[in-house]
Image (cartoon, rainbow, N blue to C red; front, side, top):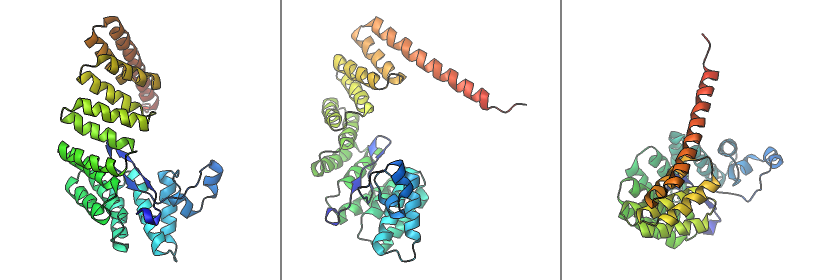
Length: 290
């Protein structure tokens, strides 16, 4: 894979790592650039939206003189875009076409495995990820994806083993540590999960969910001050998210800080009440008059 200069972009799914292959070009995308992009650029540019990528790859595939390599890129990247758009049947169709075109190229199996995962066909997802690993034993995304599938089957020890391998191959992907922490927590290994989340935060300090998760793990081991610090950080990043306030409220309650817990309770209640009022206003505005 790396010898052929393929760029890999990971993608997350429901809190677990599900990476998809993206054959990319380093193309900065301003609004002006986007308007002038060729179909190939739109298909391959890292910053293309799923809709732009879908249109660009479709145009590439429609070229009467498209080379085998162009077709492979078109099927792989269109499958990636279609996954983002939730069109899993079409992902499977494009993946099958890519596999038929070149059965030794991993991207068709990886994209198809992701589509199977999304459609709850876990066994076939695992089979496709395993095939990717046979083709390329250094393909860390396939190990992480297979770990996600084992996690979904509640085989947490097997999932952790897959994440261990993915991290050994590529130690700088935050989601791998986050997802291994999920599996560790399901096995009651909260201290080790906290360590994994700390590493994930080092790699991706702007991911608010990582602080929220680590705070929850710290509550489990009785480290209430650490939990409160993480929940406070999450609140500073997203002050209008009531679940962060609710989490800190519970931590304050456990610590015996009744006044601080009450303040978080009231703030969360205000936010939730305002959201509910906005929802009612929106429904009343959009309701047809009789």
